[in-house]
Length: 167
Image (cartoon, rainbow, N blue to C red):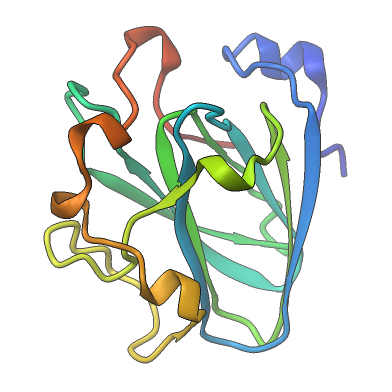
């Protein structure tokens, strides 16, 4: 399986990547997110190497016509689908198999001081997660609802950035 080919992906406006990450979850129902970086925004190309996840992207860009809207896609080792999440979107996923190994390529480096997030169960976002009682880290349980995030802590919309894409 070819997971990335720069020439083909650039035709769709996907920028080059500078960092690859792996995330391993060893139980069904683990929910990670919703995360984003503000001053060092990351576009992400998400793939699943083992297992299955429900992957979510939420548009957080101030002024965007799709601000606060989300898209959710089942990604698995079996279906070989990928999700590209542009800069300015929050990202999260829920493990729907017994375990999952998730790969994601990033357009900028991880910056701990720039890390931000939105609460996974924000009632206004109304994300339809596939589990009723997810396993959520203490850190992610502390994240605020989108309505509680100051405007200056949200990315700004630029029409050239695009929307989340699935391949």
